[in-house]
Length: 282
Image (tube, rainbow, N blue to C red; front, side):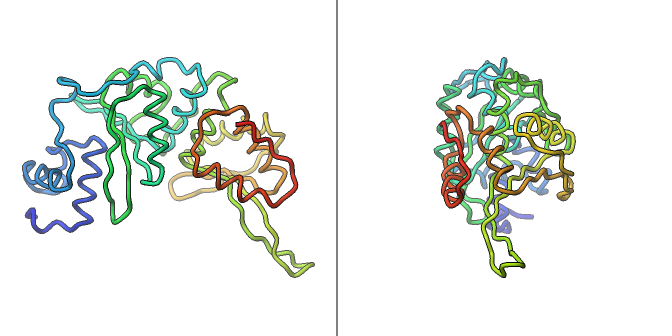
């Protein structure tokens, strides 16, 4: 395949993989072109070509941030990365990458502030969708994440890490912000022949991870055990009803400082029309 035959979508796909840590050499083998062709595509999409990783580091952060999960911020970001981040480990490079919707750029700014990072947030398009991304190359940082189960290709094999009890709700909130949520929906009442508002909580992950996740919710939110639902190659944990969802919401957001603004505001707006007391101590 020649350089000129790549579609716009393919170029964006290559650019995203490169930003997520894939090397030009590996990408050249995937797309059956020379690595110089890959580099031309990278430059054409206004992405800076990497130099030798960590040899001439331009950026800094607290690379010991995840060494000990002993604050709300560390627990939250560990959970968020477990859901919506990825690590890539190769011979000469260990990289953490978080890629989000463009409208959530302020959330990456929060991450940068918490981890004292000077790394840039890169913006680009994937299939006409705005994306923002941050990548941090550091072996110590990635090794510490590995200790908590955040490994390469973790999605279907993720295990629940050992987290101090006082930080569990912050870890869970981070994971939910990455791969879960609280949702309103309409339900039909046959007796009254009308629709009414109902509420649901759901989160998706591996079976083992969700089994431990559910145990924590049962213990802290007075819930009964519910069966996990198969969702492709993963599983989904789901609870519905005002009272159950309220209890989960209150536990997850109790005494918190960091959360995804977009989701939190949406939750508040959607739950405002029912009378169950919610505790918004954030």
